[in-house]
Each structure stands twice: as C-alpha cells, then as structure tokens.
Figure 1 (spheres, protein in one colour):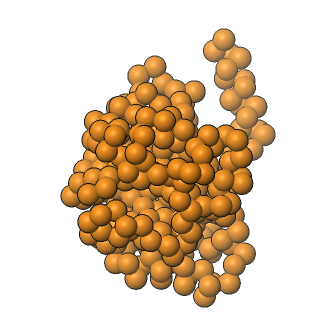
Figure 2 (cartoon, rainbow, N blue to C red):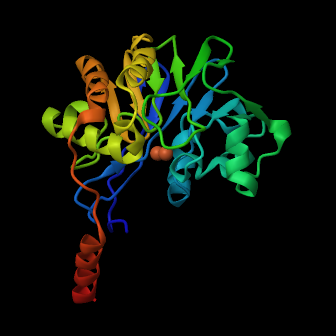
Figure 3 (cartoon, rainbow, N blue to C red):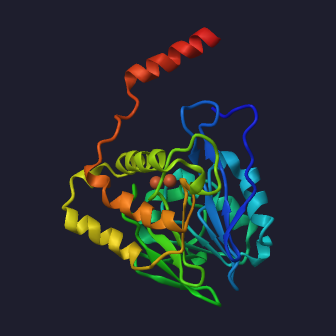
Length: 273
Ligand SMILES: [Fe+2]
Ligand SMILES: [Fe+2]
C-alpha cells in the first residue's frame, strides 16, 4: 500500500557522474520506510545498475533517461534476480537498443521466461568478473549479505563507488539521500536486523569465512557505498557499515512480524472500512 502522496527524491549525484535513482516503500503504511534504489554511472559507455520495481516504472525510466539518452545506454547490470532489482529490466532493454544486459547463467535459469531479453543481447559475468566500459573497468564482487545465489555487487575503481545490492540495507523513518540523516544507533540496529532477515544463514556460518567476505569489500577501500536498500554511505560511515556487517552474525535482532501482527493489520483495515 502506498501513501496518497509519496515523497519524491530526484536522483542524487553520489560521486562524479554517478547517480543514485531513488524509490522506496512503506511510507505512510508501515512503521519504517525501505529504500528501493538503483544506479546510473555515466562512464564513457553509460551503465545502469539494477532496474527498480515494476510499480515505479514510469518514474524509474524518467529518472534514468533524465541522466542518459536511451540510445546511449551501453550496459545494464543486474545484481541479482529479485523483483526489486529486475522490475523494469525488459522495459529498459526495450527502450535502449544499444544496451547489453549483464547477468549470469543462473539468473537466466531462475528468471525463466520472465526475462524477455534474448541471449544475443546478454553477457554473463560472475563474482570476480570485470566489465570494460571504455574509460574504466568495473569489477563484479559478491557482497557479504545476499538473498540470491546469483548476487554480485559492482565496484567502480574510478570513483570508489561500490554497489552492494542487498548488503548494508537499513530501515528508515523517512526517505533519505544520505545515511548521515539516520541516527547512528538506529542505523546500526536496523542494519543488523535487515542483514539477518535478508541472510538468515549468516548466524550459521563459521566466522572466519564470513569475515573474509567482508574483507574482500574492505580491501576495495570504497569511498562510497551504494545499495538498493540504503541511502548513500559516505566518509566515516563506510567503515561503520563494514564494522556493523562484521558483527551481524551474533547480533540479537527483533523477530519478524508474525500472524498476530497480520491479525492486527486485518483488524485495523476492517475498522477503517
Ligand atoms: Fe534480494
Ligand atoms: Fe533487494
């Protein structure tokens, strides 16, 4: 359920020629708001990273094409096959005749016929793979927290921006552009909670192996972290985001809403009707 008036955030330039495309859900209908972002990198060969929710198609395409002409989009990188990352992939590829879709084999298997982009317009890049976009080489690197086996993040060594897909997800009390707008204690607890919700297996893994996955991101020395479910993370908050990820496996987080909560929602809807 969306509010009657949804806060509109225009794209945010988070690094030179690198723009966060904003969307969110939960505003006015849930205790917290969740970001649903994607990214545009105006490299020599422009790149779109993830494609938002189908429900937001009109605004999403307007935001992307306000930054780059459809015919100039050369690459569309999908971080994984969830609906909040693939919602407009077919529409975007239809509108961008010169774009090649960056996915991987398992994504095409899992998406089946919902992915209408022919193999001739695809390139498959897995964790550790690279993509030459003319003036820079982007690196695909799986983030530590993920909810699909197909997940790869994307690092731009020119700007130091790392697209973390579902990692570093945080609840927000209101739509935000920069994670500095979120109280640091709320952010830390919220990230722990979302990390365990996204990757419940994180409490079951050997710590040394998990820490090594955080090390891989830390070794990039990212200047800015961007992700689907977080405002942009800059400056000192980058190290804090990594540190919070490291303590995720043993964090104590609230349980997810259950049937009792659903019944409260149903009751409030019945009363309101
Ligand atoms: Fe996901
Ligand atoms: Fe997601």
